[in-house]
Length: 178
Image (cartoon, rainbow, N blue to C red):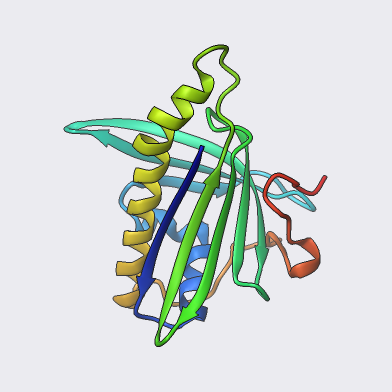
């Protein structure tokens, strides 16, 4: 399964990158995020994310835990899901200047849950389009509103030790650092 979501934001790359990387602020900026907190320390920080996906009027809680890498030089944030139904999913946020705007592209890649017979089908036909794509689209739209409205201004990163930064710690999807 591969999903691709993108948005164009009327703001400088630096402001967009700070909002994308400062995940602990997402519950303040994005109404569908209920909790985002770092659970690991040291060389392998992990981030637990809890959100709500609604099917019509019925809210459905979703969650996942990921390793997170930030590459400030390339304006990329990467995740590798390590817990939850999407365990094994690779996610890349790439930000790039686009005139006086910033383009943010999120790509999710995943072979699906290890369910015999229906795992790949579930990933391609249900989880990808009805969960991953929907949540990513809402996240991008919410960050766009927050950045363009000036609510996402401020520092980037969490208190305490930050996620690994810099190109030497960048990880290609499917090849997480050990």
